Length: 461
Image (cartoon, rainbow, N blue to C red; front, side, top):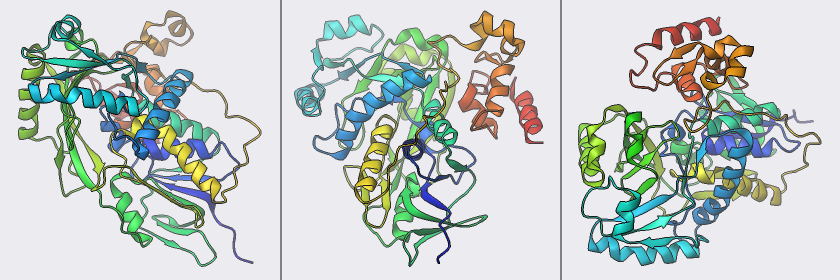
């Protein structure tokens, strides 16, 4: 008899989409292994997202992306409320700055209606400036997009991964896949640093490297071109300048430069859109920052009078195709989830549903587990909600929640301890930052960095 397979499903890539798929499949009687090349989940493209809870109003009608965005928006909104992912329902204004952009607005409304977003409304110049008085001069009109919002890009993949692990998922971090091949008896063999892993089903959610993994299995359907998006994060004192997301009229290449609040209480300006060759080039550039500052001076001049807290860049998995490259070869048990751009955060739960349904239709057994996963809540790192240092009853029970380690972001020793002892614990400074907000404030870790490093060393012993 052939030796049993190591796992039922191997998912390659623990970004927001891979984690969402792991969460979905662990709801069934399946052994699920989630493989991540890096040291943490959600630490690649997912952490540098523009963090919009996007309705998909401007997606190309009839595409898979449009359908999954509409579904994902509803699913993630409900899930976030249930498990404590910070969400703010700010709404958005899409602003036209010239006659050409103004002429695009009716087409955007028509496209939105085709995508099921029927609540867009044209806004005149007077109303634009009444609602966002700090806009720069020259706006010609715009659209109100009332259901757009903000979502935490850090907590979302962590919540998915936490639920998956609680349900029995085997999460393996620092486990890059060097090669993958089909086995004669069916299934797949993946080569990892610690040895081979065999799986009946394979889900390719490798993000920037999804095309490479796809080619290992003999396909040549798309090529990922990393598209760098640089962003500037302004100090929290800038937050009163903008009450909602200020969107640009999109082009064929990019959604344009936006100005938006963040769930952490800052204001974000960006992104750029530059196609690159290297898939690891996340450096910020002088030209990119200069371009963003020029756009910021035009859109909201007063914003540039405020201090910059941070600049960062993320890489989006752009391809030569206008839609997601999501193909499921159900009979052999292979799902390729490629070309998922920045909208993947909002669509993540719907993408997971789609993969589940397609693999299930091809024979994957989907027997629900008899017992639901234990209830859990993610630690709140959103500025619009009560944080641990503000909760007297919590501090009385555990004084660690009243002891501040990061004064810029009001992060307590109790939160750092919890992040190091979590179901999916932090293993480095970046992981602590994404779980607690420590190290992401004005001083960028100058005050708290040494103590955080010491806590990490202590937890690793």
